[in-house]
Length: 221
Length: 309
Image 1 (cartoon, rainbow over the protein chains, first blue to last red):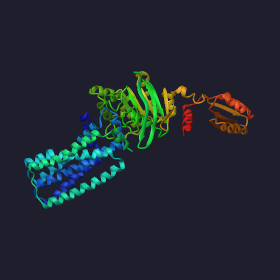
Image 2: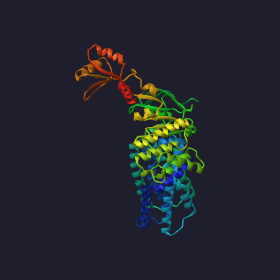
Image 3: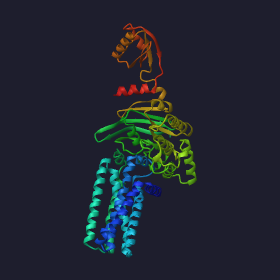
């Protein structure tokens, strides 16, 4: 059942021109930043990946997470909740289905940056890219999805503004940090970095499991 | 099991507002049950509770003897068309039906393909099967929503205004499909619509909701005889006499409608003809003609709703 919804989400993402163009814009922006300002700011590619890659992933995930709200706006969620699917299954498959394209965009951006820089990455960074970044994206999408389920349409709009400005403030802070220091990734920092999204994801999963259909239905209008 | 849908003493409160006041009805297998009422009467809330989308404050709503909220496997036996069409606009008509067929457990690919073709032909959308739903007209989407609800061969159908936005031809198609399913396949249908002619045509039994209460629950034929049991047209020789009769009967509490066309002065009264004649004799107006009319569901509905308001 999950596979069916995940595949449907990916199919819809591929066909969504607005979402695709925003994802491509982010990739292009990052590449341009790297080729201009950031080239002087950081010498260490690992530092860049450590801070910037999760931001890119969350930004793309944020642009895709609108699909939770759209399902409410178009009334599709009401029909889906009448099917044998549970709210938990719906949420989980949607999180996975939106994380995959967001991660692909992030991975493409990081790969392009690595190719531009012309040098390889270490084992720890590779693990970080393969494990921590998708978890970061999934936890952000999961949390945003949960909030979009429980909030009314006006509140969701407010939430989107808050998240959008927070993301840009974070990006600004990250760029500043990159200009000031060089960080090396250790196994312990990877474990710590993995803890945060895991905690968020597990907590959100339990919150969704307790969420009643009534709460979702009554916030449709 | 004789009754597929059983709703008993359903009460629903949102914060301090009570929107359903002890709604009860039962729908037999193969019956097409019409749930009517003005906007805000509680139709959608009732359907949402039956489907397990909302929790009742008290009372119960059972389908096949169980609550759909608690028995998710039972939902496989149910098809729904709600206010939203429940379609994915970036997928084609075929992909939408294929998705729902999989969700409802139709595993075999060939079976799915055959069923989808069958159902798309039934709603007249087979030619548009590869077109994205986003490009569909309102009517086409509504027809596809019906196909979506039928794709898994449900035993019970919940149709909330399924003909909304459809042209006359498509409305007739939906009515024919619903009638055929109930008569030939024994599918139980809960149907809501503001089109009373349509409801009169396809429903066996009707419940009229007003202000969260059932104000009438009966077979269509029996309902048309209520209240008072009659609709009569009384014709008068002059406008003066018609107006006098009209004023007098209104004072006595009759429900009536005055009509004047060309040479005819008449009033339509919902009451026993002998009683009306007896009352009119008291004011000495000359009655030219009196005849019984066939009342439509619209007349009964308006009478009941106005009385409640």
